[in-house]
Length: 371
Ligand SMILES: Cc1ncc(COP(=O)(O)O)c(C=O)c1O
Image 1 (tube, rainbow, N blue to C red):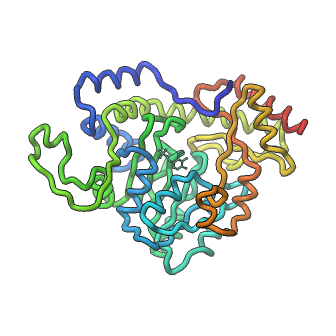
Image 2 (image 1 turned 60 degrees about the vertical axis):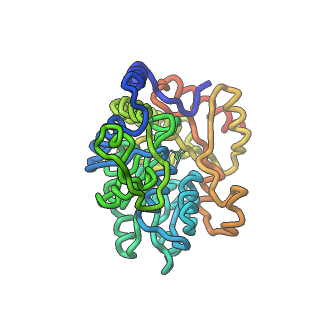
Image 3 (image 1 turned 45 degrees about the vertical axis):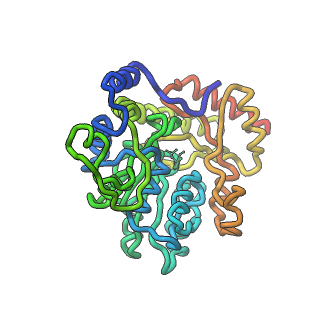
C-alpha cells in the first residue's frame, strides 16, 4: 500500500526520547524552551509557545487576541473542523467564507469583503495543503477594517514568512503533518505581549511553572486569568527538536515529489488539474488534485485502494457535516462546493520514491480513463 502520509522516525528520535527519560524530568521544561527557540529561529521570529495541539493553539490565539462571545470571525468553509471549533470554543460566530477558485483553494478576499459586517473582529487564513496565502494582502485587508489576523498554519511549518504578518499563527505537529511530536503544536505572535498572554493561558494562567518551583526559583504561584491545560511535555519537545532539524530537507523532498506529480499528470492525465500552479515556496503538505466534473470520485478511491494506493479528501466543507448543518443553513459557497466535490488527495510524504509517484499516476490514469 502506498500510504497517504507517514511520519519519518529514526535513531535521532529514539536518542532524544531516551535522553529525556534519563533526565528524569518529563513535563514542561528545558526541552520545551529549546524547541520553542529553535522553531522561532526557523520562522525568523523572536519566540514561540509550544502547545498540546494546533487546535489548542488556535483557541489560545483567539482568547489572547480578545475575541468575545458574538464576535464574527471570517473563516474558510474549506478547512478541518479544528479551525471552526476554536471559534466556537470562545463563543464567537464563525462566518463561513468561500475559496477563491478551484485553482486557488484559499479563503477568498472578495468573499471576505462581502461578508464583513460591523460585528466582524477577525479573519483566520488557512494555508491549504502547505501553500501559503498572500499574507501581505490579508494584512492590508485586516488593517483597513481593524480586524485581528490569525493564521491556521497547521500545514506550514518552516514555510517562509508564515507567521510573520499575522497577529498570531498556530502550527500542527499531529502525526500526519510535515513534522510530528505525535500530538502537539506551536504558536507564534507578532506582539510579544500577545505571545506572553498565550504562554500564560497555556498553563492555567499560573504565574510560575512546576520546574521553577522544583528548582527553587519560585515557591508559590498566583492565577491571574481563566487558563487551560494546553502544555507540551519534554518527550514531545525532544521529538520535535529532532524532527525540526530534518524538516527543511523533508519539505524540499516533498516539493520535488509534488513537482513530479504535476509533470506526470500533465503528460498522462491533463483532464485532472492540480491547484496552485506555483510549486516553490511551499511545504507541499498534501497532494490535492481536481478530478474531471463527470468523474465518480468514490469509485476512483475504491479502485485506487484495490491497486494499493491510499487516497483521501481535503476537505468535506464544514457546513455539510451533521453537527454544523443547523448552525450554517444555506451558506453561499459556490467555489468551495465545486472544489470539495471534485478534490482527491494523493499520497505524498518524504518516504516515497519516484517509482511510487509513477505507480500512483498510472493507477489514477487507469481509473479516470475507464470511469
Ligand atoms: C487545517 C488544519 N487546522 C488545524 C488542525 C488541527 O491540528 P491538531 O491535530 O494539531 O489540533 C489540522 C489537523 O489536521 C488541520 O489540518
